[in-house]
Image (cartoon, rainbow, N blue to C red; front, side, top):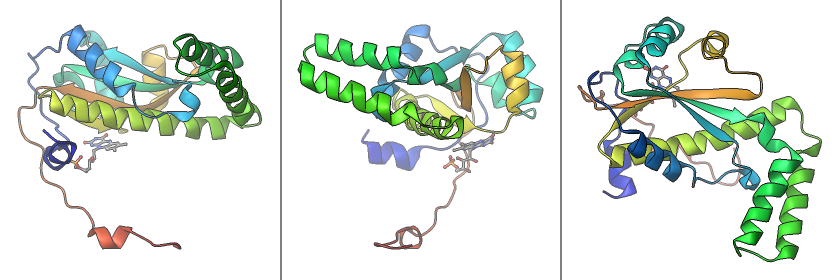
Length: 207
Ligand SMILES: Cc1cc2nc3c(=O)[nH]c(=O)nc-3n(C[C@H](O)[C@H](O)[C@H](O)COP(=O)(O)O)c2cc1C
């Protein structure tokens, strides 16, 4: 299926087969694909906390305002941004790895490393939060498309209490919770949704 076809067919699905299991291998393949998404300076800050334990899903149900997909979908993935990815050591390690793999020479390694370190140097926590949201959102969309391609359905979710979720799952302040993605075998097709006429959303040269 082409990307266009997948996008045309995709719906947010809210009813899932609770018996259906996604194998860890399938999930790892999907996440590995999503990790190829563009991300700022390739610091690779997105993390995927996979929740498949029934007791944890039940714990999260009221936190996600009793949205049934939380317990019925095969997995609930907490998409996280890792603030530690902005640290110098991570930036150096990633570019050194790419250099060692022969993807570029030492001068490019040094240029990219220094550029990335300087880019984040004076950023506020709020600026860094935006960086994490950008990267995690791009990876999330890739994950949704890859899941659809694999015959699975998804729903991206922000309908949950962030503080309660972090407390229930012991997620420290090192991480930003960006969204949840429920994934599984859809039981009922999501309803159709309309979009603005494209000419209503395109602006040329000024807005
Ligand atoms: C960031 C984000 C958060 C969302 N949160 C929820 C949610 O908590 N519950 C829900 O039922 N749908 C949620 N949705 C799904 C949207 O309602 C849905 O994408 C939109 O209505 C368009 O429908 P479609 O995805 O089927 O095209 C969310 C979507 C996004 C992108």
